[in-house]
Image (cartoon, rainbow, N blue to C red; front, top):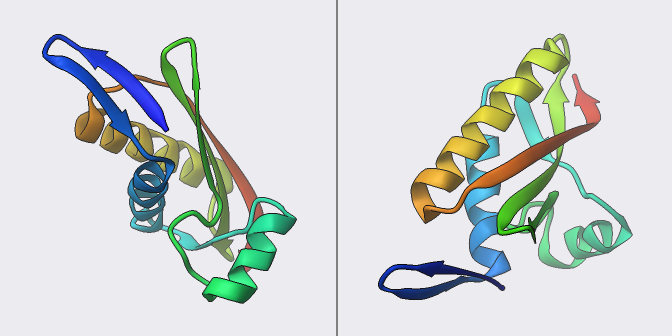
Length: 116
């Protein structure tokens, strides 16, 4: 749960909300084939919940009042990975800041797989 103070009061966001917001923004970017599991917990959840669920490959934490977003993705073969990662980072940052009003410190994009 991430809580932020605004002039009219406090607002709390659940991790599920951020996971869905970030995951959908990333999946809409060119070249993203799928979200990749970030650890063994995600891999096991994939087996239980199916291959695609909102929290897969996404981790959002708060550091000094700003958000740190970690993404684990699989990209399409032949894609310029550095350009795609930069594009994904900018889009996710813009979408989160626009939807929540919170500032994003950084977006870390890890390419874990290349799908042909």
